[in-house]
Each structure stands twice: as C-alpha cells, then as structure tokens.
Image 1 (cartoon, rainbow, N blue to C red):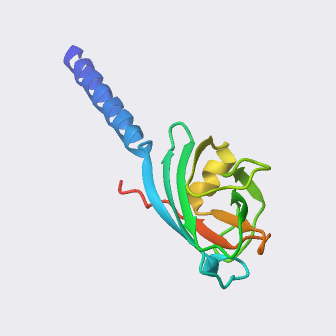
Image 2 (image 1 turned 180 degrees about the vertical axis):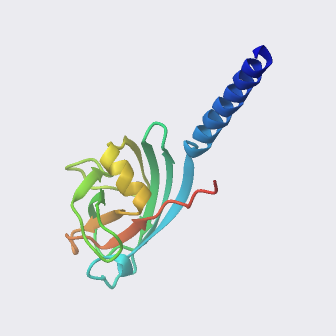
Amino acid sequence: MRMAGIWAGIAMVALLGWVVSASAVQAAPMSFTVAISGAQQVPPVKTAGKGTADLTYDPATRVLKWSITYSGLSSAATMAHFHGPAPAGKNGPVQIWISTEGKAPTSPMTGEATLTPAQAKMLMAGDLYINIHTKDHPAGEIRGQVVPPKSSY
C-alpha cells in the first residue's frame, strides 16, 4: 500500500512538471514581421508607399512591442494605429495608438503596449491591422494585417 502511494506521488510530480513545461512553451514570446502596403487598405490605395512592422508579443505579459518603418507615402504621415477587430478586407476602430496622439509620426516608429485581454484575443486571431494615415489619405494610405505565426506545439 505504501509503495502505491509513493508511485502515485511520483506520477503527480511528473504530471505537474509536464503541465508547467507545456504552459511555459505556450507563453513563449513570438516575433514576426508584417508587410504594410496600399493594396491592403480598404478600399485599396494606389501608392508607392510601403512599410514593414517587426513585432514581438509576449502572451504571458500581453506586451506587444513594435518597430515600424515606412517610405514612399504620397504626403506626410498624420497618425498611425492598430485597428480591429477586423480580418483582412474589413475595417475596424482604433485599438492602440502607434504614433503619439496629436503628433505626426516619423519613420521608424517604436513602442510597446500592454494589450487588454480582448486586444490579445484579437491579435492572436489575426484581427488587428496596422494603419498609417496621411494628409492625402486621411482614412489610411497603407495597411498591414497582423497575423501572428502559428504555434509549433
């Protein structure tokens, strides 16, 4: 009887170790790149403007970090945001300011935000997008759908 209890204890410790290990894998930070173009804008915008966003997201803390560069816009950038929830081809409201509200952005733009649980869900579902607005295109000149990498576990 005592030996069965010892084996049960060992099994519980092993199971707990596996659960903790699996949780650590799921919570690992992820880095990915988003292409930003006028073709992704809704409706599409003919522009030489383009950009790239390098994003890092840590699901354990819900911190999203970004470094975004752009060039070739038709006029000066006026603001930049993450919008959602909206899949590709749809528009959504502003969720997170990328540029400082009230100040024209310049390339590169860097920053970070702690997402709300709802914003984290949008991010992981691919329902956020980056939008850079300009004087000539106040609704947005270039856009990039944020699609995080699929997990490998």
